[in-house]
Image (cartoon, rainbow, N blue to C red):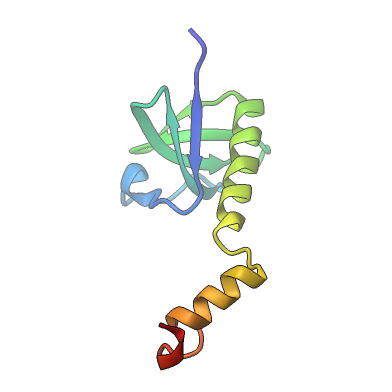
Length: 106
């Protein structure tokens, strides 16, 4: 059975790791979900390998799938912040960036 990986870089990883400290030299990069049901903290170990951490227990992950998931996460995150002339005009019209909506914009 092939493992499917979904990564969320803005998710609260500490909920899955718990109150204990991370392993020495490890950094947290969000959460990882395997096969739609198994979620844990996504940790980058000092060796350069990504692992899943749950309550102090580390499990290996398929590195290539993690890299693809991280790249997709970055692209998705940037998509929400892109701007275009049409978006800028809509924001001005709706008052999101320029204060209250203009009365003539109705």
